[in-house]
Image 1: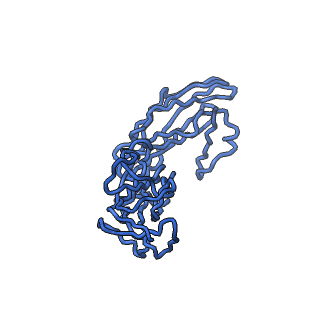
Image 2: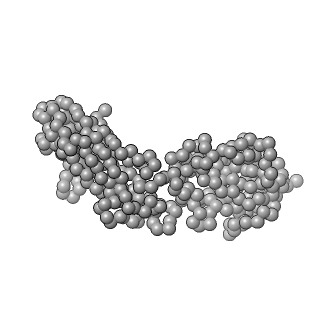
Image 3: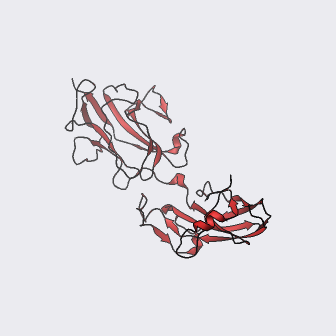
Length: 308
């Protein structure tokens, strides 16, 4: 399938719809994804099709756009739109070698130009810099197209997922209006169990957390004080997940404070005893079946008993 890349006028940055509708040149890509530093893809072949009645010779140029930092200095979560820091040096953009440097394509024919990218250097990788630009494709018959590209100058798998900037994550008592972090291993919760009701005054164990980055999978598993002969989930012996977890496609920056009634995800109830919560969030570009591909936090121990 071939795609038409919109021709853009030089006045005011407006799209020239007439030129886009009447061009004779088409390419087989909508955009070019360079990925991050680990999965960086340097070579991108582009098929250029000349559907006109005369031959065209195409020349190419790299139009570098601004490079933006996703994170402000010292921040864990992305800046709001419009508040990004820009890298002022034009050298922060990618460079491109075109093979061949120009391309002649006959009427109703196609040919391939390969774009060899070298990613930007000298950027602060800890702030997740995003660099971008356009490949300008100019035909001798007047056709002019632009093909956007973008990449990330860091390893996204190394980016922190759990937000620890505001004291998260932590164990809390659901009835505590101040949501004070529980750090001792001695808190006792009296749970209503499945035979009685509970309300806002009932103190339930709660795990307060927020994500700095979105995650495909977030788990909260329950682990006894001395786990033995239990199923291993991602390398850890656990009783099971709390009811409502795992969560798929968890968004970032929205604090969550799930409470635990003692019920597990399979519908059963944990016996009275001492437990800890194990919070795990899958890292970006990671394999959900590998335990080391999760960022993990464990709470202090707490004890649960059931009201009689």
